[in-house]
Image (cartoon, helix red, strand yellow):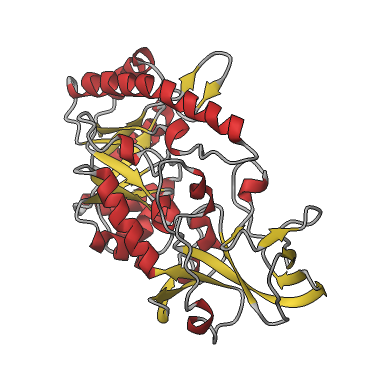
Length: 395
């Protein structure tokens, strides 16, 4: 993991703190790395991990094999369509009738949208709207490829479709909906793509255990995915078979049964993705806080900092320092809502100085800031608006 702070203070010297930063050289390197890791597979950009129209366009223009986008809500999908994006797979079931109706109007004009389904209730709402608008909605079936060891459930508890039998029952009911067309399936290997496994001194035994579980589950994931794809292709004209994520893209580059890999977090390379054994990404995004107090010669206080990531509330959800060998949180206070005490090792700081951080998860950073201030080769390179800067809040 390459960390480069060269030129940050000069590039950002005129900005009010706190602010969010985007290192364009690192972003470019991550885009190239993703393309290399995915091989000849198409890449679908996960918008929840980017949350900026301008950055989405930036990434799309630099990927030679971008198939489209994976959105996370119906209203966000509508916004993306209005901004000129197309071929959007809504990565999660949606049940917001008004937004779906508005999407339907754009589908009627020829825009490409896939709705995610794992239950007949989701499809029934889509059928009602599509029938009323006299259109056909394309759907993607979400297959649960988590590994159930009985003594341990390894994966996510989201889609209930975890076997061919359950898939068959759903398909039988979907066939009764004339305005619904099955054209895709998704098999997200969350237990591979979304679980850290890099060995460190504190969690070494745990991480070795996780790597063993990952290795053991890959065969089951592949088998079920191939069975599902064969089953669906015998019955429908399947256009997309979506799989993978940042943590598993290298394993799917030559998988013959899929058509695309979803990638999002790899572009910003947030702090959580420093803890993957097989990833070589560069920190591309984060935020900066100003030191406004000096409690002691080795303890300073920054204004702001409580940008905690979603997930199980443990230390890995805290923002991480861009220079972790120099800074540490106070064990009694952590990252604070409006002020954060920081222990400094081997460096002198004064009031007014800046400390740089990385958010634990990718796109969630953009929910805190209106702009991403960019730097390239040590020089300030302008701003990209976030969704928040556009006045949008989707989830």
